[in-house]
Length: 466
Image 1: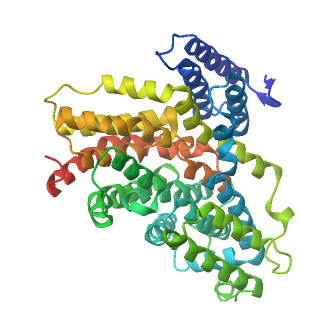
Image 2: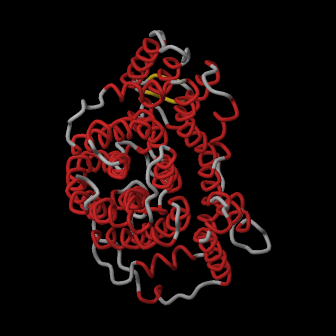
């Protein structure tokens, strides 16, 4: 039997979970708040309830996002404009622009052409996954934003999955999309400008009076483990946990098919778009707005690249509600005072003077990862960064090493909703957040238990850590 709530059929077990989460949230909201932050417990309750819905997927992400906004507006824990800013954010613009670019790639045949070229000579599923990871690693150095890389690669990889014979929902299809989405995001921690999380973390450190970390120094500290080792671990996780049969061979005659005039026009547009992404340090245009402009060009009737009704549908557009809700979590934590309350609680866990730098490193890594489960990655940065000077004073862990420790934790998300680029990519690739957790959870655990100790040893070898 099934119940019905929010316009969808839900099994009794799921209804019971929703009720349980609601009761826990109510209990949190009535606890006494800290001095000076009367809305802290209410904000924490709203975030905890929403995160529980996302983590367990008892409701579709769209409905969970709508509930989050309803509770946030009804309680008044955050101002309206900041709370709604996710709807016109860089990420939302990339989703809209990416949908248009993807529709154009499918309609003109450019995605299929590139996919067939990519599959040339690849006869096994592990080799296909490896080639995607290698290509995305190269793009990490060329396109300084995960969102930009997603807009380029997802239409191509959707065509690749189709050419390889992997139907939507199959293990092969899910493996390909997770590799281009989660794989590209996680491995981009090894290159400083390749990930907005890296840039925000570095900026937050500098506001505390920390040292300025240069491109080369960052690459030396982070690329071997956060980049290369994480790539190998991700490849192994996909091959072991999402095994699939070999891709279907592409006939030689189709490999030689030439590009259509429309595909050539789209290729030129994409080259210009990539150049704009690569040179953002000159013009300072956000990648989402560049993607939106490219998407609007794709919809121009005179170019014949894409049609509006081919690109946009109700389910795709309303997925932006889920994205805006993820971004709104950090807003609620900030304005309600719940974020400051969590940071104060974290400071209570700070080791006594005389603890080892390695202890401080592991504390920061585990804290950043676990806090991101409830506060998302942007919220975790805001909460953990202010504690770095205190941990430095207690353990002797340098701020530079403390930043690296935080990145190790942030690179270990347990759920898709913690990282906006992963959420965006899954929406564009039509893969559920639950499917992503099958890969993210094992990688988060191994990242904290394997990469973190190895990163300590590497930083000691470099002389960054005592």
